[in-house]
Length: 301
Picture 1 (cartoon, rainbow, N blue to C red):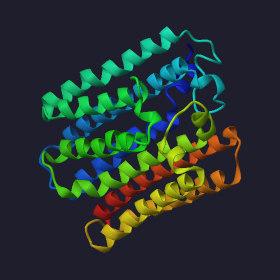
Picture 2 (cartoon, helix red, strand yellow; picture 1 turned 90 degrees about the horizontal axis):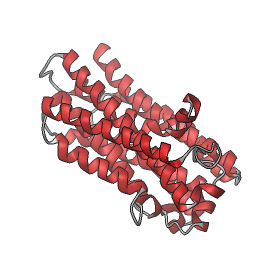
Picture 3 (tube, rainbow, N blue to C red; picture 1 turned 60 degrees about the vertical axis):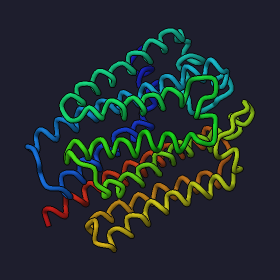
Picture 4 (cartoon, rainbow, N blue to C red; picture 1 turned 45 degrees about the vertical axis):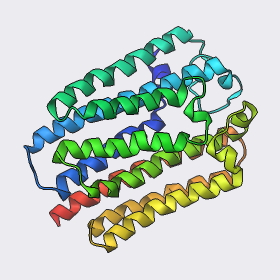
C-alpha cells in the first residue's frame, strides 16, 4: 500500500471530527478559565490528546473499510469508501493490520495522558474506543442503526471537548456543555451527510440508518435543522454574556452548511453527492476554528 492509498484509507475529510473539538476545547480552556499550570504544559497535553483522537478516528475509518468489505457493502458503493480493497486490490489482511496499529496507538498514548492528567481518562477513553469498534464491527454495527449519529457525536464531539477542557482546568464545569453540545451535533451531522449520500446503497443492503428511518426528505430537513441549531446555540450564549460576541465569527460556517443542503436538493448521483461530505467537513471545521479564533481575539481586544 503506497502513501496515496493510505491517505485515502484514513478518509481525511472525516478527521475534522477528531481535531475540531480539541481546538475549541483548548481555546475555551485557555480563555474562559484561570490558568492552573504553565501554558506550555497544557499545550503538550492538548497535542497528546490531538494525536490520540486522530489515530482513533483513523482506526474507526480503517475498520469501517474492512467491515464494509466483509459485508459486501463496498462492492456497489460508488463513493464514500477508499476502495483500498475492491478497487486497489489491497489484501484485506493489510487493512486489518493497520486497523490494529491505529487502535493500539491511542491506547498507549491514552495511558500516558491518564498518568499525567487523571486516571478517569482510562474509562472514558475505553468507552470511546469501544463505541468506535462497535460503530463498524460486531453482529449489529451501530453505523447500520438509527443511533450512528448520536454515538459518533457523543464519542467524538462531547467526550473530546470534555477531555481537552479537563486537561486545561482539572475540573468539571457546566460551561463545558457550551462547546460540547454543538460539537456533538456537528459530528453527528458529518455522519448524517455520509448516510444521506449513501442512502440508496445502504437501503439496498438492509441498513436502518437514521435517514433511512426518517426518509430522504425529512433527513435533509433534519440536517438543515442541526446546522441552524448549532448557530443559534452560539447566539444564545453570546446574548447571555457567557461567551464573547467575537465567538459569532463561527456563524460564517453556515455558508458551506447551506451548500450541503443545496447539493442534496439538486443532485441524486452519489459521486456528485460526495461533494456534500466535503462541504460538511468544511462547515464543521470552520465552526470550531472560527469560534476558537473569536475566543482568542476577545483576549486581545
